Length: 305
Length: 245
Image (tube, rainbow over all chains, first blue to last red; front, top):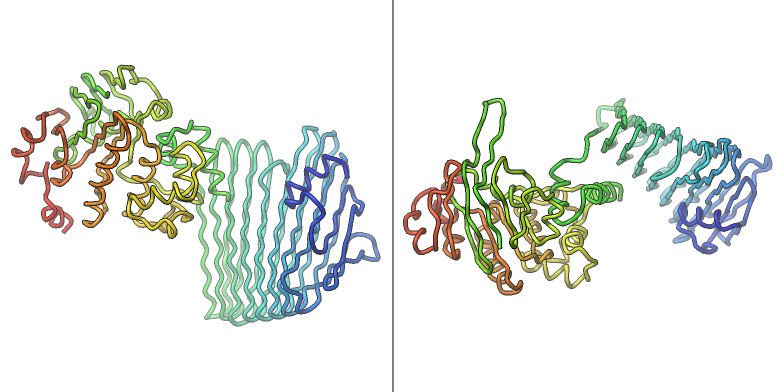
C-alpha cells in the first residue's frame, strides 16, 4: 500500500500497522491483506463481491478489522460483507471506509453489512467514514447495515463521519428478538455542500428487547442532513431515539423521529433538538481566553466526542 | 489596576429607553478585595459584564493597568488578565470538567493539578474530573466548577458575579477561604465580587453600593458596612434562607 492509503487507513481504523487478530484490508477494489484466526474465519464470496466473516461460538475478547480504502478516482463498488457471530461470543468489529479523490470522477463505495448475532453474543461495532482530496470528483458512501439479533444478544454500534464525504445515504435496519439490546451512537458532521441522509428502522420483536439510537450531528456551511429514525415496538420492550443537532452557517437539518407501538407494553420515547451554538457558551469560553473561532471548535469537538 | 470612568450603559427595548448605568466611576487598586453590593436590578451584574467585555458601554472608559480596554474584545481582555465568573454558569454537552480546566489554564494540566483546583472548591476530583459539564450537574456543582476555572486561570483580576448563589452554607466558608487563598497566591492580584451577603462584605477591603444605576456609597468596609446591615444590600445567612422561602 502507498502512503496515501496508509494514512487513510489510520484515519478510518486507527491502524498504523497490521492489526492484531483477524483482518481484511480492501484497497481500490482489491484485497490488500487478510488473516483468519482459529476462531474467526474470513472467506471471499464465490461471486467475488464481498466477504463472509464467521466467528465461532464462544469466541471471547477478539477483534476483526475490515477497513476499505479508495484512492483511485472514478472507482465505484458495491460490496457485501456478512458477519455470522456465534452464540456466547464477545467481539469487537472495526469497519470503516476512507476515500481519497484527487481526480475529476466520482468515487463511490457502497458497503452492505449484514450481521447475524447469535444468542447471548456481545458485539461492539465501530465504523468510521472519511474523505479527502481536492479533486472535483465526489466522494460518495452509501452504507447499508442489516442487523438480526437473537435472544439476549447485545450490540453497540458507533458510526462516525466527521469530514470529507460529499454524499451519504445510509440505511440501518435491525430486528431484535427477546432480551436483545441494541445501542447506536452516531456522530456526524457535514460541511461545504455535502448531504447526509441517515435512516434507521429498528423492530423490537421479542419481550424485553431494547434499543437506544442516539445521533449527534453538526451541519456547517451549505450542507444538508436528514435523520429519520423509527423504532417499532411489537412486544413488551423499551425503545429510545434521540437526535441532537447543531446548525451553523446556512446548513439545513431535517429530523424525523418516529415511533410505532404494536403492543400495549411497548415503551417508546423519542427526543429531537436542533439549534445553533448558544451565545453564552461562546462567551464563557472567550472569557477563558479563546477566540470565537477556537471556542466554536471546542464546543463542536466536545459535542461530537 | 482597574478603573471605570464615567461609565454609562443604556438599552432600547420594548419598554423604551432604559438607563441601566448612569455615571459610574470607581477603581479597584492592586491587592484589594472589593465588593459591589446594592439592591437587585441596580445594575451590578451589568458592571461585571462591561469589565469582561460581554457588553460594551454606551459611554465612558475602562482602564486595566493603565491601558484603555474599553473597545477590546472578551478574548483580548481575558488574555490581558481579566477573569469573569458568570452568575449563571453555562452547560456544555460533551465538554468535560477537565477540558474546561485545561482551556482555563491555557495549557495541558496534569491530573494532580486539575484535582487540586477541584479540591479547593470542595469537589472530589475523582468523581468530577471526567464528568461532562452538562445538565447532569446541579446548579451548585456548576457554580463550584465555574470558580475552579477562575482558579485555573490565576489572573491578576478576577470578577465574580454572585459566587455564593446556589452554594450551600457549608461551601460559604470554603468560598471565603478560596478568596483568601487567591489573594495570597497570585501576586498583586485583586478580586471584585458582586454580592449582597454580609459574610462576603465582612471580608471586603472596600465596598461599593450601586443602586438605580449609580454609586450611592463607596469606601472602606468599616465606613460603609454599618449603614448596610439589615438592608437588602447586606443579607445575613438567616435573611438569605428566608429570602429563598
